[in-house]
Image (cartoon, rainbow, N blue to C red; front, side, top):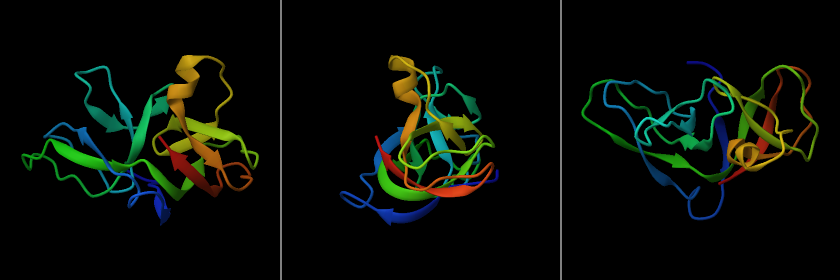
Length: 135
């Protein structure tokens, strides 16, 4: 995959890692933005808008290695890539593609589950910016 998050600072208790369930057969790169799928509550790599964000994968997952539990950081500052529309400093951001973020502009509970964090910089189209992650 590409555009993985780069951790700048772990906050809280070492980034407040959370245990997640992943598919054994899937390879996932460290720094991948993960979301909760409807398929048995298995965490998957982000791929589109509208996905409920879980956190940032803490280590590489090797395909078919027998491992079905990994962890994600839920409280940190990380460099993330804008999906192309630009983001304003101080706005909330959401998942918007494979390891991409955009301004979280939807109203309602579903929009809240998609929120990744708070933009700590302004992003021009497709720029990488610091984001405070808090789940």
